[in-house]
Image (cartoon, rainbow, N blue to C red):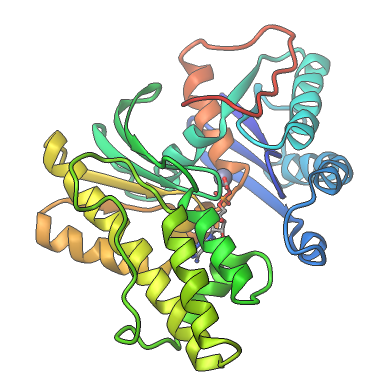
Length: 329
Ligand code: KG4
Ligand code: ZN
C-alpha cells in the first residue's frame, strides 16, 4: 500500500508518499515562516490561504518524484491545529481520495509526531515511552503499539515550544522563536542565572512552563538591552526547560520500567535536549530515538507513515471531511 500524506495543521504544508514495502518514496515541504515572521507569529487566516496555494502543487510534485499516478490511500492531518489550516488539507485530501476512488483517513497530528522516529533506519521497537514536545503540546505517553497510547503526564499550561517562542519574543528575537532562542543560548553563560525546574520537586509527570516564561520576563528586564545579558537569559531558560524535560523522562522510564524512549515534535530538534538525552541514555541504560531533524518539526512524511499503519490495519473514514482543532490523543 502506498499512502499519500498531507499535513496542514499550522504553518507548514507537508506532503509525502509512504509505501508499506518501499518506505518513504518522496516528501516535500513548504514552510510559511518568512510570511508569518513579518507579523511576529502565525496569522491563522494567512496560513489557511497559503496552504490553499501550496498543497496541490506539492501533491503533484511528490507523485511525480515517486513516479506514480495515484496512491492507494490518502491520509491527512485531521487535528489538532488551526481550524482553517486543517480544513485545507482535510478537504483536499478527502476530495482527492474521492476522485481517485481510494480510502481516506484523518490522522492525529501528535500521533504523526510520535511515530516519526519509525521513518529512521533503526526504528524503536514497542513498547516505549514518548516525550512529545511541540508548539502546542508537551506530553509523556506510554506507547505499546500503533493506536495504543496512554498519557502519563502533560503540561498544565503552556507547551514547552510555546514557552520557547514567548521567551524568544520577549528577548526581541524573530519568529520562529525556538530555534532563534537556542542559537542565542549558545553564547550565554550557564552560570549567571538559575531558573526554576517547575514541578520537579513533587511527584507526578505533569509539566508547567508558564512560570518559566514569567521568570524569563523578570530576568530579561534586569539585563535590559545588554546583548550578553540576553544571551545569558536565553541560556538559563534553555537549561531549565531541557533539564525539566530530562528529569520527567527519567521518572517516566523508572515508573513504567520501559527501556526505550522516543523524543519527537518541534522541540526535539533542540541540540541541548538531544545532548541531555544522550547522557540519559548512557546513565539509565535506555535507548533514546529521535526523528531526523527535518522530521522533528511538522512534515507530511509522519502523516503518511501514521496513516499507512492505520489504513493497513483496515481503518478508514467515511466521506466526512474531518477537521478538529481540539482532539485528545
Ligand atoms: O512540531 P512543530 O513543528 O509544530 C507543532 O506541532 O507545534 O513544533 C514547533 C515548535 C515551536 O514552538 C518551535 O519554536 C519549536 O518547536 N522548535 C524548537 C526548536 N526547533 C523548533 N524549540 C527549541 N529548539 C529548537 N531547535
Ligand atoms: Zn507539530
